[in-house]
Length: 212
Image (cartoon, rainbow, N blue to C red; front, side, top):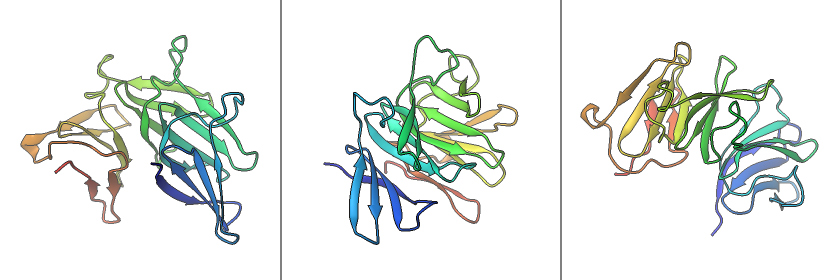
């Protein structure tokens, strides 16, 4: 069945909340009226949401009227709550500076103003929102140690932390591109890595949901 993922208050209307779903697109709830509505994929409408499960949604760091969505199978979507329109960033073979794949479970907007996307099986990408270009850090080009990562979060010092299946955690410094892998010998659990299963606590500690 369908279940919801995350919830964000609308920056323009405090009575409205937005939430992701696994099958019904982007949901909208008006707490004053109690009404629900959904923005679903429409094959005939290029400004509709991509098909697929939404695994993360976050308000844009520069424009509070914009939401960013990670869509499994549908890349990254930009949603303008004022117009109700989506812009899809999906993989295209003829665009080397585009998104590397469509299986996206997480992204992070950093304190330095950067936008990082983890594309499952393809690598980590830095997304330039103004130029609409993606820069790839992957095993293939030698700039990232593990393309199977699922979650990405930023710690209080600006370091990115990623986890994925197989009991591996990657520490990545976006300032110099250096990375370090932590594994079973470091005490990392083996097993599955769940989408959304990473968080930074107020004291700076990072928590990952494991498979055990």
